[in-house]
Image (cartoon, rainbow, N blue to C red; front, top):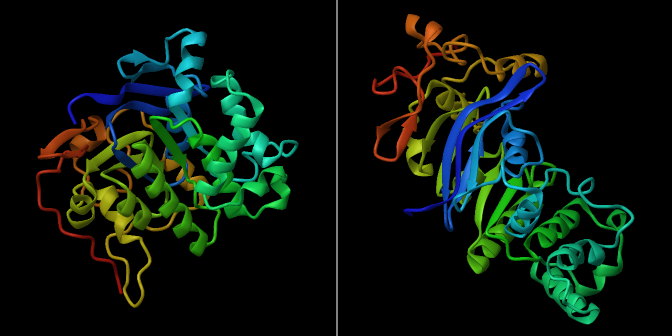
Length: 324
């Protein structure tokens, strides 16, 4: 993994006067799946849309194979979109209710492969429906005639019909039943294997992220606070927020240790907003130092392949002791 397919550098996204993503940088390599985790409101979905230029970015670069997507001309961006696809969180609302499943999946072919005749498109669509676990005859149905899991399969089929190089999955299983989640995750694994597609997989489900990802990005308040391989991150998290995030995962017969107190939606949104100076996590961190109030820690390599944005990342910090 020498040359990055996707390189994001110093990306910043503002909503009005409020920064939602600030100074964010990472790389994604050919065939790699990056997992992206963080609490609600931290900017995960905003990042996904900013990468694809579905949202305006105030600053930074998003380079796809060396070409900056944020500054390239509209015709060039349209040509690149066949290699850059996204699967959205809500499977039903992401489909046009006036279009059949077949027409939805065929639309990218109409745009990017206009030389295909109707019969060739029909065969491609039927094969893709079968590939995602549906019947080719279902192409004549409308979205309201499908379950949520089936709608998400249609969304995946639409995204994969062109064999893209990058697939961004924005919470693709969060609205589905647990049994259906496993089926969709296995489908994505199969498609990744068969097509060699790289993925940015956004999810609240840490178990799924660990299963799918080659590396995991942890996001807080619009910034990356930790990057590591899944086994390393889950076994030895170095950032206090990552520790709290992992400790908050429910376990049977065990009490979460080291987790910050649960926040209301309003508190989550406020906590996940980038701050002007200092560490954004300092007010919730039990290990905060005076320097955390004035200086934001850079994302630095604390160990080989393990990047952390914390002034105390080289220390062996003890887990929080919660009152029984």
